[in-house]
Length: 130
Image (cartoon, rainbow, N blue to C red):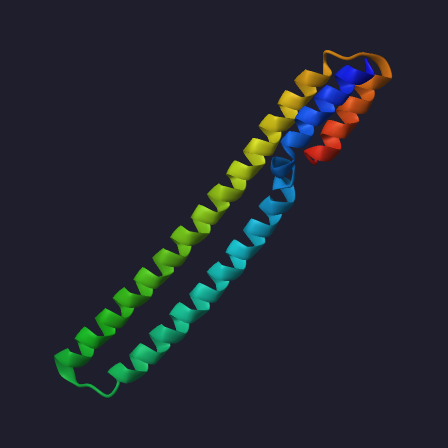
């Protein structure tokens, strides 16, 4: 039984990089949100600066300048949103992988019984942050 538990534990350890995914998930989300906030602030500052430059113009040139500033602002905000959503998707993927690996580890533990099974399940919970 100990040999079998050791083999199962070894196979779970091979998946250790995925176990850190819960922590990675939170870090990725935090970083993505910080980058999104920074991109929004940058877009707002650039927009305000562009509008200020437009004030020096008259007539249609001013109107064109303002519309171009608005378009650039819209593009910057859309780009920031796309990057944020991509980071969130990556975090979700890491979470899904950890969950799948945990389920596989639990299934491997099912072949054990008694304290070996309990130990195996406890190890899987710790390893996959469940």
